[in-house]
Image (cartoon, helix red, strand yellow):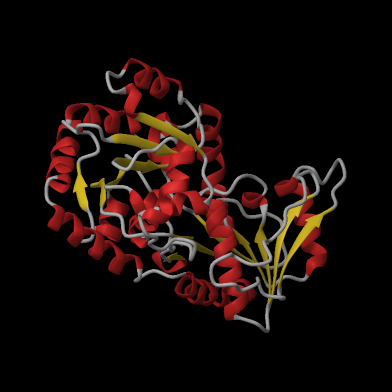
Length: 380
């Protein structure tokens, strides 16, 4: 088969959706060497490149995986409405996979839509009003247009079926995975990274874009409640929407000298921090999957995470869960984990075992099955 994949998530610094798009495309190309995979994006964006190798397993991306920067004129700049549909008319794809909530409405091939979460609809207050409004308008249209839908968890699958009245047989929950760049490294080998970032030996870690949905204000409150001595709180992530109140809270915090904001970090630096933190904390109020906790587990970090549907589904039994609305409970859970070295070691071991249950190879095989179903349904 010939598969087109939405390349727009790769045109900016990769976060969750960008990593999903690239890792899945690479795994699909390796799993199906007789098929062709093309990551497509318009010429209104700067050229992007696939790395020649991932730096860990030494494997190049497959020859059957290519980038296509489609030349578009004034009309084609309206990518989803005009540019992409025009390109699809001559591309002869069997399937187009919209990896980021969008599929073309005018097409001559099957389409698969990935819905990572419904946060714009479930928690619109945590997003810019324009983006929440766009999601309310566009998502129902995309759901009706797609032949098949992929979600990262059963929790999101249930939400999609309930909210949009979708037949359950059209929606498939396919878990994601930590990238192969995440594995434990020795504490000594993390020293250079920590020194460069101003991080001492004893620190707690949170990773995620600085935005309201990540619930970092509750984490700060819990950090202030816990008598942590000289422990630092390190927050790694790029500045997102409505980060101002968080910065103001940090500025006013009595522990502000022990709070480190690193900004966006690439995988090598993240791996060092995951591997050397005392505890990784993920206080988000809503997630579709939760890649950072899985990355932390793959590096051997003990994890404390929010007791919300997707994180319970993925990490119950391999992490300590807490009510994301309660700074008191988070502080209590922190105390339990930090005061018991044996418990922390058991938690870290359970996390590594859980992380090993997920792989992009599994995700690729399950996604390929969805492609085949979508082609059958489209041709009827």
